Length: 256
Image 1 (cartoon, rainbow, N blue to C red):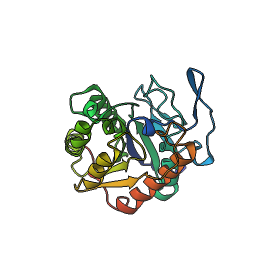
Image 2 (cartoon, rainbow, N blue to C red):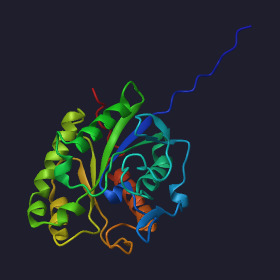
Image 3 (cartoon, rainbow, N blue to C red):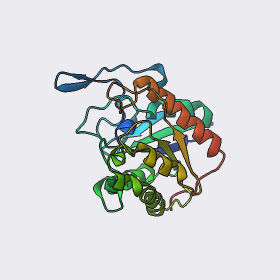
Image 4 (spheres, helix red, strand yellow):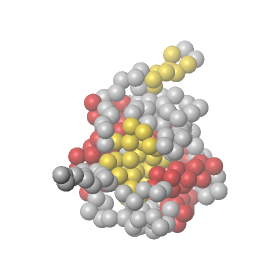
């Protein structure tokens, strides 16, 4: 007797590259005690895992996403809660597909360390390409970028931030063969003497499909540099809303 078997379509996976430095890697809930640091392991409901949220591990294998997302990427620091899981959970019910996160952020890094040819840049591009390799149902939807605190220390670095960031955008789009890849920057919430100069540079970038979300005013930890866990959740929601508002209805070209 012949039976009909219903084959469900494989869910699509919308992929987001998370890159930058420590506030993207996540320091929410990281506590300093004496001369050491540890993560308090408090995960807000907005950052809980879900079967449809995956992360690309350092081994280049997809696995269920959990906090801290960057634990095997930003390996020389203690990682805690960042914006990524709150971002993915806010997107998940709206996009209706799997959400794939590609963590690439490394704390304490200046934008010159993300120039084409540098190890951080090469690793980010490699991970992005591997995230869609052999996967017809996967598509890179955006690069979410939170970096710049290290470039607020010197006037010289702050002065060239805009040019360096624009070059990064051009390079990553070219190397991923995604000429209109959406880029969502986070305008800095903290930094050193030249923070306003870097913030002005971030907001002055006028390229197609490049927007910024302003983190200024979000609560900082006692170090006055890193966002609290609560602020990371808020930022994740802000990033999700920005993506949905500006890019969700606009399909990006698939990598060739």
